[in-house]
Amino acid sequence: ARVFVAIDLSRATLYRIRWNFGWALIYNLFSIPFAAGIFYPLWQTRVPPALAGLAMALSSISVVYKF
Image (tube, rainbow, N blue to C red; front, side):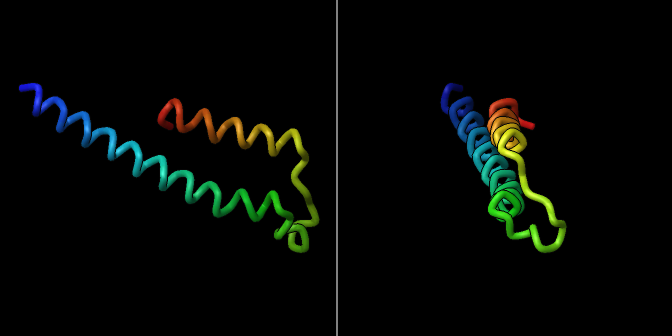
């Protein structure tokens, strides 16, 4: 019975790792260029440091709380 519990736990863990990787990939594909200023010529706006810090914090919180 413990073997089946361990297998279920490992599957749930692997699912969570894949989900977090996918979320981080999508998040970073947009956030890093935006923070670097690549979109400045299009939108004429920059990311204030406080907003960048908030975005980093929300990213970490989303991983911890499994959003």
